[in-house]
Image (tube, rainbow, N blue to C red; front, side):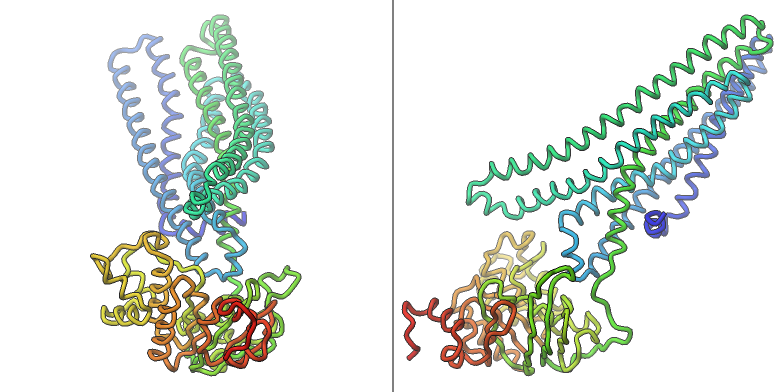
Length: 583
């Protein structure tokens, strides 16, 4: 019921069509159940020697009712398809919108491949189930009830056979659901693993080919695909039991009706049971058993969709771990930053802190370099500034105010981050740059590209700023992508600019030009540069040395070279063969 309540919110504007469909189906079923009764009456009239006018009257009535049944069924098919597709559209929209509000912690909870499976395969399963519910799931029970009633009206004791058959079918259906439900639950997790394998392979295709690992990837995919296939095969084998059981019951009823009905007609000379009743009871037999067959398919579909619905609801009900306060502050005063006794871990279940007891004060307009070995938590430190994560302990302040008191959008608009992984989207260079400022003029685009040293390669393209960027920037080099991402961040004109190892793919000369341009273009902006190369942070006002999630040292390049062992080791390993002091 919880899943139904949550999913029903996505029906919205398709609620009217969802109500109209069952009404139309009900009319179709009523007419279909009356037709055999009229047919039986016509048969008896012909047997008793009626005239041609009577036959024409009944014939026209049957034609009109057949057309009405067809019309109601056709319209119901159209309305149910529109309602189901619209429901699926809204469902995907609601999921996507909620995912956009997720914090990084929420995203870490779901794998990318799992989210894709939930928004595609799972939504399709629920869509099909919804269409079946508002159409077939209404039609089959109604048909079963009406046909049952009419069978007793027309056949009397003859219809008692259905009271024997229905429990047999119900037992078989219960067995099928009991056995298949756990298999469907398992198979979706394996779907996630299969999608993950595909995603990794396509994303890392260049690496796969450069290391000639195609065969290994093929085997990995084959293993995942066979795993999914095996579970589905087991489920299908159980589902296949449904068909023969239905056929068995159908033929049992048919044999009983044919033999016992014929015997009754002959022995009573048509007084207890006549030819018209005989034809009607056979028709109702097919209606009842067909309805039961459809009901079994519905239950199987609902079993499959039930697990999909749970996975969808998990995404819809996931609440962001980051939220705006009741009365948020919308104005960031300046680019000053302060860490007060800050400790942080990515998950509450994590055993150790990624950052421990960080105390740091950065003045507005300062240029700060951050350096340290791999895994020293440099990126974790700066992710707390735009509140991509919240500190587990302590307070992070921007502009003299706790970041948790700001409106999230306002804070993040004033903190531009160029991450390690440079992400560009499908579209032109101009469209990608305007992520920083959608209203930026062509002159502003040219200015930030000049500052980021991107103008020199953009102008070499025939279409310049209208050059199309492939998905993920596949048609650009690593250095070109980095420079475009820096230019995009500059368009925001932020109070704080964070460059997270974002010049690693450019040469040292270009790196120096970018740093010089940033210093001249935005002197009042606080600039934080995370780098692996000491050359990238040498001219910073202060350099922070990170080690094991703690601040190991703070100072200028000369101070750290003289006093800090870690910084000195990094510097000499990059710049000199020996460990002599700098002249």
